[in-house]
Amino acid sequence: MDESQHSHSATGTLARASMADAVRFTGKVVLPMLAGGLIARRPRAMAAIERWQLDRTAVAALQRLRRRYGPGPLRLRVAGRSLVLLLAPADVQHVLAESPEPFTPASREKVGALAHFQPHGLLISRGNVRTQRRHFNETVLEADRPLHRLSESVLAKTRAEFGLVSEDAGSAGHLDWEMFSTGWWRTIRRITLGDGARDAENVTDLLGSIRADANWAYLRAARTGLRHRFLRELRTHIDAAESDSLAALLRETPAEQGVDRHGQVPHWLFAFDAAAIVAFRALALLATHPQQARQARAELAGLDLSRPQELPYLRACLLESVRLWPTTPAVLRQNITAIPWHGRMIPSGTSFLVFTPFFHRDRQTVPHAHEFAPDIWLDGRAADHPALVPFSDGAARCPGRNLVLFVAGTVLATLLQRHRFHLRAPARLDADHPLPFSLNNYGLDFAVEPIPR
Ligand code: HEM
Image (cartoon, rainbow, N blue to C red):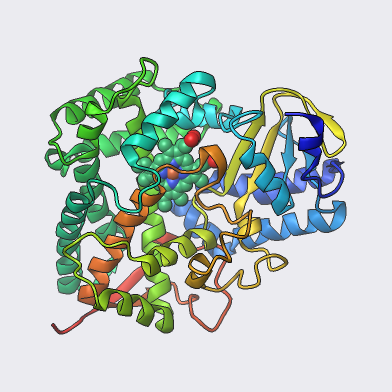
């Protein structure tokens, strides 16, 4: 990589924020993000974040920094570390396109957090072993195929479990997070670890405890005993899983020696958690936007839902959910060598932060920033915007994207086919007002009304 290539994306000079601005940034952006739990969400903190709409405060803080210092990348000192905050879409595109080298996704912060439960995970791997793990993940998850080769069984498992969720919701007259996530995890354990793991809550609960530690990154020592117990249980399920599960594919997919097949699964389970949040929020969007709900139902009306379907409109609704409320608000990179950029030398080991809510909710570049606009994912507007990156971009783009959109789309289809949903809480979501910046998935509660067949 020569200097001209690096300076190509320059959108201003590399400015340095004042100490007061760095402190303000830490208070308004970093601390609320940490409080919400980056690795395992904290429901009480999420409720407070929603109440105070702290994501709006965070986005406003970045807008203020852009007004003050211009759109070029901004250097800040946060907790004694040098951080470069990206403020222009072109710089986001550049840094993500230049991953994994010189901008590695395995930043110090991420390694500190994720090593608690996935020391051999792809996202925190570097060099040759990263290439091998990426190839392995792409092969098993079939990153580029809208319909995974297991889509028939994924569909059957999802429809069976969410058929039960629908029945329960119908008898209770409502659907809340507890009911939704119970069905979700049964589905995910069946898809990932096989039908025998449907009720193996201990595995996902163990992972939950370790992830709670991971929220503290280096500040909390890794409980290796707990991690070994979790990995032992996980291995037992992977080895026993029947042929129509991801675990079986994992067993039979060739892998280079350093890959550690089993060691990839903790990330998958962790990431399916974010997907539950995205799907439940998408349901809230559909419940409060009649026109989009009509379009979603029209998509389903002509289809045989007992066969795998791509469901482009429902996928677009899910993409909107994760655009509006990104589940990876901090996309981090770290340069592995010193690089010239924006007219300065940036020493190796510097962290680069893409704070996605800022770009996803920026009226300057996204005119419909605060609206539910699934069409942007279908007509090319989102694809043309380099900083709408709910699944990241470049070489570390989420390899589970297609699979997870299929699972979550099937969940929505199964629910919408049987019931109409009316959001009981929170009241602040409606089609005639800008959407809130923070939405606590744990607090969503729907009244359900059966659709006569
Ligand atoms: C709605 C759900 C999901 C969202 C929003 C999401 C988002 C992301 C993002 C933003 C990244 C990149 C982070 C970065 O650039 O630093 C990523 C990476 C990754 N995701 Fe997902 N993800 C989701 C679900 C999944 C699922 C279900 C799986 C697996 C079954 C998965 C597997 C991975 C893997 C293995 C990586 C690491 C990629 C690499 O380092 O090359 N994700 N995901």
